[in-house]
Image 1 (tube, rainbow, N blue to C red):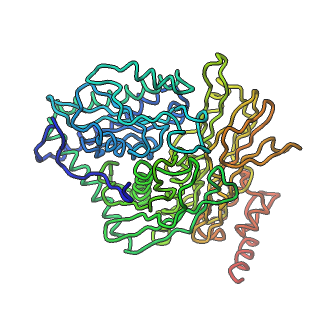
Image 2: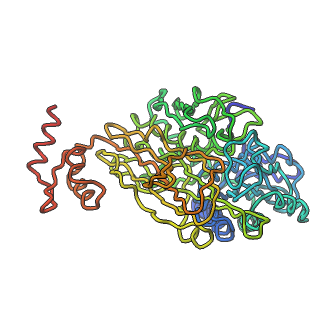
Length: 606
């Protein structure tokens, strides 16, 4: 397997029965109209998918991606959903093309989830439809979504598994529709090998409908403007996005920037053995290399990461997000293949970020979030106005499951818990929000209580104060579940035993925890990664998510902002004095200006 991977960037359409196109001039108004059409069709695709899907992770959390791509897999547009899903679809298409290029026909629908041939990981079903216009293949409509179960050793999520086959049913470039003919036997075989056949059937139909609406809308665009104009406009947009990102990269001084070495809790089997995450960002002119040399060797569990489908998208997303933050970028810059071109990634073979086949790589999201967090921390000294202090950077995906009432299938519920962002220059960290590469929504407790035997005793911000800084860190969430039936628990989370880092004088954040029967004489601390742990009926599970780091010297924080945090009960008056040098008059609940000046001056003198 190649140690580096870059999307194909040629402008010609290759393969059998494909339609070549001529580069033509496109006036500015038509260019913007076509750009808007591409953007809207990707968003419409995502709307169809999450509104139709059966599993809560797609329907409620919007753990999905969708877009339009050329015949080589170059991204023309993507939905506003999970960056990992969107960024991996070009790799899905390259993996599918290696088998099917030259064999596509109108009416084909391809299902793919092989993590060593482009998939982000095997639970992310990818559905790709080749787009034909005037009898020739001109592109793809594609989408992905995380389904509830794919078979394998354990329901929902797996951690302690021997290899990639033990993860579940692998589908490598399988035509479930061949020239418009549905392969019912193949689809039935797939559904017969999962524990949630009804949910998976609904999700599969939603994925197909999502890709079909993308195919329909792109063909309508071609019918209106013609292939030459649409593809020429698409090239302009990709070139524009590339140049905008390269311009931001050129503003960074050339050099090698290393993040503090981070450590993941463990691999889910070898307890007490942390896994090293080493990230270096090399900037040369208008190119960036994210180098993961020095990171941990691959592990004998599912805690490895597919390189092309997961590592490369996170490198691109991190650089694009830091340098082209939509909130501070006046110009509209669409996400497309142009953003992939300036960014490369490297990971030595045989490491957790580029495992050798057939190592399992089912549980990979906590690791890729740490890559993103480390890229951000590496660039913080040279991009203080753009970087963010350490975030939770640990997707907390938990699968609850049990045997269904029919005795023939399982109920499986996959929950995403929210950590927080670190502070940044000018803004406090966001509280209780899924961070970095995930961008998933929270699972409403009402949805779970309605469908499964679990009851929420608590769901709110953590009690611990936020990490001090001129701009404080965000506060993670805490959930407290009461199990009303015996329930299996599977988790691929990471508690951040090395707490999220503070930046430029800000304090570090707070690690997370999993505790069974918290606050009782039966209290038991659990590991962040568990495989089929039984939580008995009547037991409780408390999940605390990490809180982000602070940004800047906390003694420079605006005194009224500190007072506001005391009013909101994020801080006590003692916290305010100790961590920020702000004295709060607890009778009038106002800032004691004179005492605050003296306290801060004493700290400055010391």
